[in-house]
Amino acid sequence: MDITAIVIAASIPSALTGFCFWLIERNIKKQDKKRESEEAARREDEERRENLRQQQEVFLVQGVNASIALGEATARAVQRIPDAHCNGDMHAALEYAAKVKHAQKDFLTKQGINSIYE
Image (cartoon, rainbow, N blue to C red):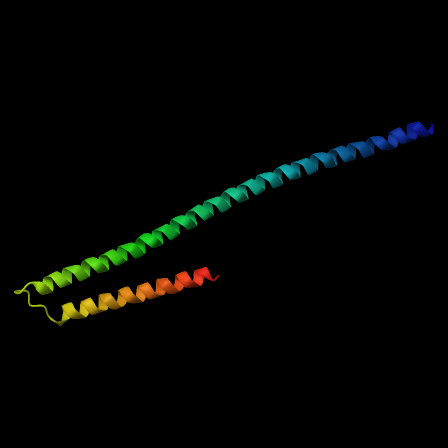
């Protein structure tokens, strides 16, 4: 055998091995791209859910504030009725509602300030 035949005989397995590794690498890159796109979609979905949770919290706080306002208005209206003999429970409930409303407002203000400086 001459040298060219030896070089050709030796290069064929190397070429096949290189081709196999190229196919494997291509397959791995496809899987990585697919995994990255799935991860991006998952992050988008989580972000959307978090935004919805935040929106739900806002509506919850607004609903509580509306309920307190309605309760206060109703209690004050009942207090104005001359025949309605309001006992100390009505006054205590009004004071408690005002206390809770101010505590919630203070808490949300502190949270807002903290989120600005984070």
